[in-house]
Image 1 (tube, rainbow, N blue to C red):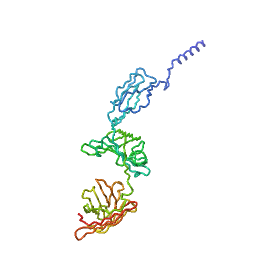
Image 2 (cartoon, rainbow, N blue to C red; image 1 turned 60 degrees about the horizontal axis):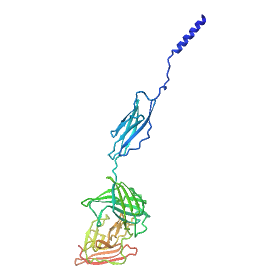
Image 3 (cartoon, rainbow, N blue to C red; image 1 turned 30 degrees about the vertical axis):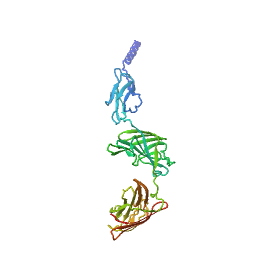
Length: 425
């Protein structure tokens, strides 16, 4: 009897044990995962195109489906019908602006955003096949050890030496190794890059005011656009220029023979080879006051002798001087010389004439007292009155006498003299 009781007790314990509920620990539920497996998209071109985003799902949920939505209307035809893929189309971008958006991929409450970026529209370069190339060489004027070249590329832009209406010109200042044959100057072979900051290094396109795109309209007015960027490749007689302007890009090519003019500027102005007696017998003399033109506190006068056949068809002489007293131009004048701290600047003061000199930032521009002889609009002789004396007197008969005894700036100075009496207007 006692054994039966014990067996019943054990059975009851086992029965109670088998009725305890099962406890599930946190983390036992499988986690749903949505993973985008596509590499990051590079930017789409402005042309647009088709693309596929790939993905994987771990621990899929029965009854759930992948959906995808584009956040911009230029992303179209989003298709999720194939498992593991989201297909879509990017429309062409007609704007010059870059645009960006994304596609949202969703599954079982999980969202993954995939970025989509598209470049702006870039108009194709306008093609120009140039048939004219004009060049000038200015030597090592800008940077010692480097040659300064200037070229103009055009298609039928010059007619009889003049710019034609409706024509375009591409003008480039170049820095490269110096010319080795001044009788046959050529642009050195190489690739030239636009240097907006003007570092003055070899094989660069300079940004010093003469590098531009010029258009001459039908009325003969010139319109100028500066370069944003440019590259020029030179191989022998072949030139390939690519230019970016604000309005458009250009691709200019030239193939053929060309010449470069040697326009090196001498350290001296004078091209005289001997002493010269200035002949103003066919000239008219005139005098003008320019007030305190030089800003030095003294009245500036200009005495000019101009050829009666025209300023550029004979002798031209100008004496630029500063009087000691206002309204009194008569007297003896010596050359002003130049400042010690700036040898390009005349030493302005009363009682002096200003020597002929080149303007420092434009070596082609001459100022001061100068003697020139022209033939058919072209200067064939020139010299500054550089050192010496000028005397201006008034005569009792109403005429003036002007005497010059001066020297030019040649390495071996030439003497320039004038003894003239006549009427000054």
